[in-house]
Image (cartoon, rainbow over all chains, first blue to last red; front, side, top):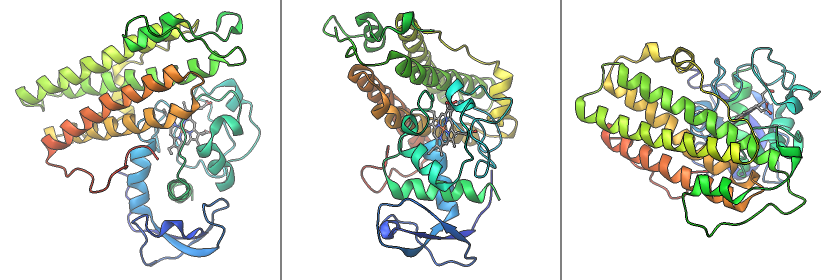
Length: 145
Length: 183
């Protein structure tokens, strides 16, 4: 469906990806600094974007697609996009009025606890696992380039 | 939207969702805010509307064998029951329940035109059910009301049951590891 296949991202982040099951050797290293991670230690970690896409479909796919508004707004291009800014999606007033641009750090906070980042939002959905958040954010970033 | 912002989850709202007897008489802590819970319930309701639409598209596609069609209709009826319970609860809490979109909008958002076999339909259904199970698990910590959090877990269990059955029809393997749902 959206075949970005085997793009690999180098992530500067926690070693928590190891043991998560989809660390692979990079063929095309791209720098992507992930601000938040479970681990303090900085080490280069590689995310398999094809695996990250599966995770995205499992965790976000009931409500989001890349190119169509579903229960939530479409995602392609979200990294670097102003929050709550798509004209044809009906955001909560809180997100519609938010004044920031999505970057990795904001996304990490949003997925950890959206209400803490934007009080009055309506997504409510959280991911407590930092490695999963990092993988999904890397995937969204790859779809935004 | 909410009755004077009164942060009270009436017993009837939870009963609408729980279908249980009179045991639930919880109210929000007076500091709680029901509007947040109503917003999440409405997102869940929108998800159920889409699921009903997806099964409708599958049923009307002519791609499903008779026995599979029967299962699809049964699962759709579960989603209709979820829809009715969520809408009742939202109204009982003083909110406005979101309406379903036109079937054609679901068809386009889900790219129904690309479905050309029973397997395609079942894969789409399985993907949506797995996503729904994860969605219900992922909103649990955001509910003010413990009762609604439990309802969310019960809805996740239904979606997981659907996903498991669909996976088995598709011959897809079950997860090797434990704790792959939610995160």
